[in-house]
Length: 115
Picture 1 (cartoon, rainbow, N blue to C red):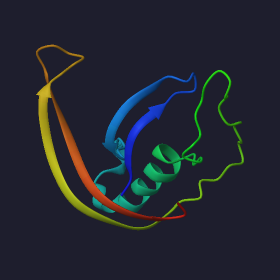
Picture 2 (picture 1 turned 45 degrees about the horizontal axis):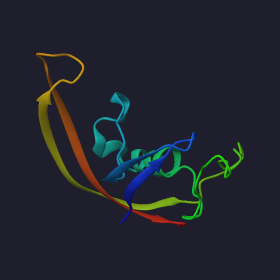
Picture 3 (picture 1 turned 135 degrees about the horizontal axis):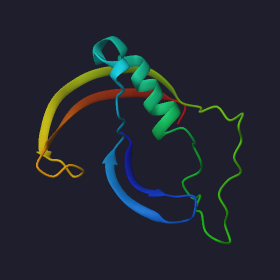
Picture 4 (picture 1 turned 180 degrees about the vertical axis):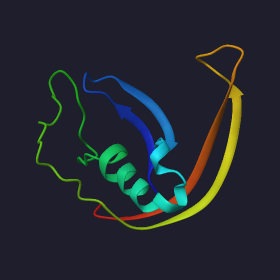
């Protein structure tokens, strides 16, 4: 499985993530069961894993970010996805005091090739 331990921004800053691959759903992607493969492909190839670089790659003043290549195609392909679970978490809204926010969390196992 893939576990995202940290993220590095283009200016060199890092932040700790310590989380699994995650992606927001759009309203058009609901119900998820009808769009599961497309959502998994988007999450893997267009969002979270869009650019694959060697694990030793670091961005710093003396080590600039890799050049952007508009023709780059993500080498990963989703070969199988399986819906595992759906849970709902309700918590106070961070943006709107006094309101509650409901988060629908879907767990999906995704099998990829090309890593």
